[in-house]
Length: 345
Image (cartoon, rainbow, N blue to C red; front, side):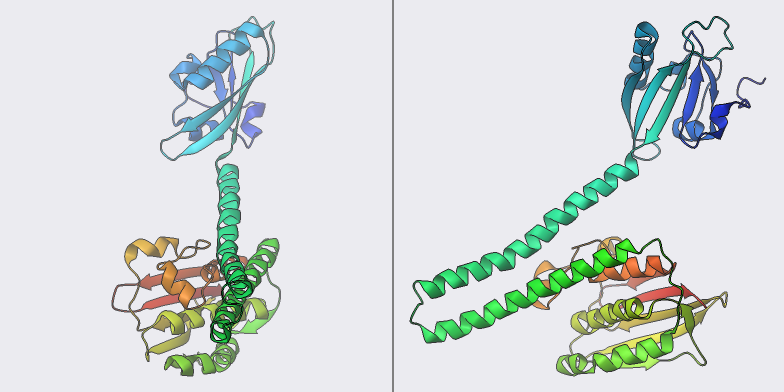
């Protein structure tokens, strides 16, 4: 067998990275996943030639000395940041021949698991913070109305108006959190119904007409000639498009224009809907993070306009569930375009 060629052993069938060592701790075999992790596996040479991570070599040495299973953790920085949990297991402590496997090294990638745990922790912390602020405001006004401003009717009217706004803000936040949770629960279930993007866009714009009039904005729908049918869930697509049109009205130019355009993409198996405004635009450093939960270009501006920081995250999750893509293009002073592309029905 060529010294760098993979052998036909059982570890080749394993999904997780795995290597076998002989009694002298030389690498006998490595599966494809292990080669991806280490980049270059040197067969018939000591394991330290494949990986110089002290955690791995120490665990292997301990397993050889103690004849016991040992665990270790690898933090790898190249070519990508990864964290892997490894186990060194003695297979045949009586192995005598050099071609006999004496130890198995198996690895499990913890990168995605830890990333999701970190995201959940950040999500809980951000949600708690977003709720704590209006709650503190309500508590402060209540205490003031019960104390120093007990008999001040004018102050009562002003405080009650602010308290109503804060209560509305908490309601919007809770509604968005529930929406996001529902969408995530069904992320693995592709929609089975058929809907027309022309009809959805027209109904969304009609429903938002009062909001557009208050902002002095003009919203125009450019329908696709013929039907623009996609495989999708009506209510979720309405929510996604409504979020994008609302954002264009709220954050676009005062008295500006919003265009909702339905199109057919190449290849013809795709349909798209794009929402464009002629507002101040978005700086390029913000674009990659716009769909993160609670991420805002301007926190103060978003809160003043009733934003929860979850609208685009909801859109992204809906589009992902529909096996589509969301593209965002913008430049400062030239508006922004949010384009959803979906498979045609």
